[in-house]
Image 1 (cartoon, rainbow, N blue to C red):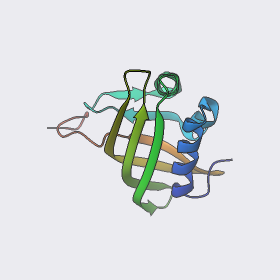
Image 2 (cartoon, one colour):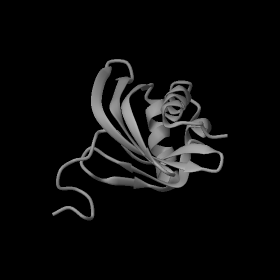
Image 3 (cartoon, rainbow, N blue to C red):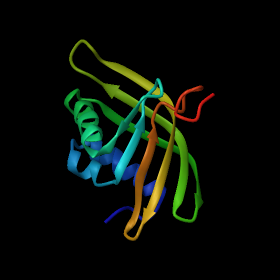
Length: 130
């Protein structure tokens, strides 16, 4: 069952990733998800998303998600906040904080992540950019 509101969805995703639960994290996404990378490149589909999330877990990265707010319009929601990533392998420790934008979709059983731009939306990127 998906979370009942966007705030609970963000918490559930953070908790699943921090627990190393790749299956639980993936369950929180729509069937055809999109993640937007820092340079505007897209990661599309469950297979690519799973590989990306798995790499984060394997590298020992912890997630902290702080929603600043979200706006709901029917079956979609736009959330914004910060994402802080910490960790890495021995000798490669880091901490990175970015402003994130996420689109959530409501299904019959709750909310799921549809489009995630964890590093924000880069200017001049994407298919409709000029």
